[in-house]
Image (cartoon, rainbow, N blue to C red):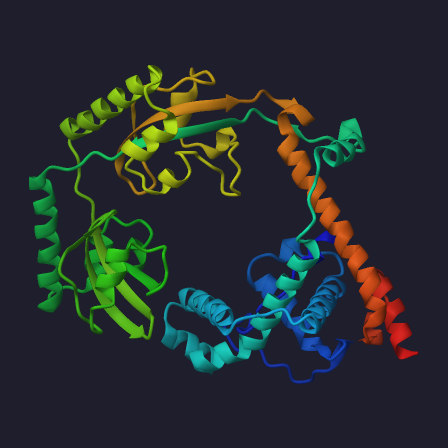
Length: 456
């Protein structure tokens, strides 16, 4: 079984490639595991959905064979999960369905457009996917049960590494590991009051009918994530990604109503409720970020210079400095560590902003930089000090420098072998059928063997 198929393959195909509901005129059962059937349309729609998501180049060879194997794997896991009475709560399924519907609404712009395109209500779409989500959850739980005791020891990691031909070991460019304390300069009270007055003036112009919210947003909002689409966001009352003050204010509004000016960690806003359905809503907002002067930036520089002196003298640890002095709430949970998108603490030069590259140029491992000014991804002026923990040299993979990477791969290989052993033991006990249309699929050889046994 291919590694990419060990994950549960559920590719949701509610919406057609041409923004229409995909209707299958003729369908048939192409495989069955126990009482779990797989339809021809399940395979066809899954492949179409993969292409629709722009992933056609990543499709495996013989995609119909690969996707059928993925479905067979999932059905077998679901069947065993039901036999083992693994629990799946309705709350978990409902949460997964809500997230999927929010994704559809974001893709199509609004709930009304989604329902028009699908030809079904949001409630009906959720019901269409309910069994799909339940099976995915059961399969995930069964896989977790099979693999819950699988761990890797240093001896096993070393044995795995020693089997790799030396000329096949990956080569790593120089990487760095670092942490930072960030300070956000605060704008003067006068500047903040000026931004508030601007937002109230926008509110007055919109409510008087002189201007449209979307028009003023495109001209004046400082939120790069929503400015070009008129400030629009799809939000959910339980979504933790949005500032809680923003969410709470939005859900107190009626359709078409505009809020008073509010302050969040991003700046000052006015919010307009476009439409609301239960805990889901579509809103627009205009964001103003009060600009800071050189004097206010200097206050933050002096603050971090004092923090740096405490660190250099050993009076506090870097983790304590982050906890007490950093203005970035998220970094307080990670000790200020800067991580890559995959969660790795090691980053290469391409993953750093240009200002950080300059700061690290002459910094040695163990050293802490002097305060430096930079502009963050939100366009705010910020100040930071950086602690360079480690800097690796370009090297071929080895156990001393790359043990965690080697151990992670060794663990995945062990899990792969465990899953294959589990399937080898359990497939003969299942009733399996496969349509002759897939007779030429080499990847299904084991499944065909057990299907033949089932037929006999």
